[in-house]
Image (tube, rainbow, N blue to C red; front, side, top):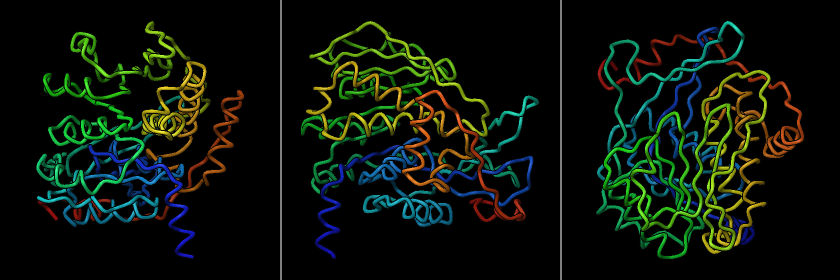
Length: 354
């Protein structure tokens, strides 16, 4: 039995990632329900979704064992995510993000993120990267992955990205902001795939240099779809190509849809690492991007960035995505949980009033 398990794990592609790993507390203001606790943040979501899709996923973080990190680790464990590198020293307090969902007048779900304790107003802890010295110690322990993903620029992320790129690992960078220009330029020079939202980041062309490894640039445009530039040597089409978004008849919550798109693209084109990605045709690339867009549309039928994972099997997800790609958008309903006092839950997670 143990031998079979080892073989199955060996057959799975692996992905390492570092960046925002936070506790998502999701609740609907229309119903005073018990909040749902998820491992969130872009890095947390992308790696959890890839685990759901059959990958071995290894987040690298500094969780310190506080209550918020306990919720994160429980969720990651349920998702099958590997936890070997989630408590890198020095440890630090866990970021917390509150997501409130309410219905608009048209009946569509809308969400807002909050980063303070609702009881005392104290800001929740923010993201702190792994130390570069710690990352250098981790590198020899990392078995050859197919993909390295990062969403926050830091010296440690760049150290691992460069080490991975030198070994033929596909490096995917999905920034939420530009921040330090010198670090950002370095990230663009080492990454092979760049994906970003035009609602969050503008002005990237002014930062890009001729010295770059970029082979694919993806700019998402919300409900307008996305555009991309294919710079693969064998199939170079440097001009922008646009793909319209799939229709979503009713949005329960759009949070996390970009993460589903990213994870789906990685799963479609990254299973054979950088060498395999170099051989991807433009037609195959479009197929992967369309699959990612359909996965993003599917996610809109659930509350929370990964609500669909809690109530739908992988087979059901794949069938739902297939129907969307064929032009059908099913009505999906998320399950509700029992009523509980919200303030008490938030208090226990607050580093001050708790």
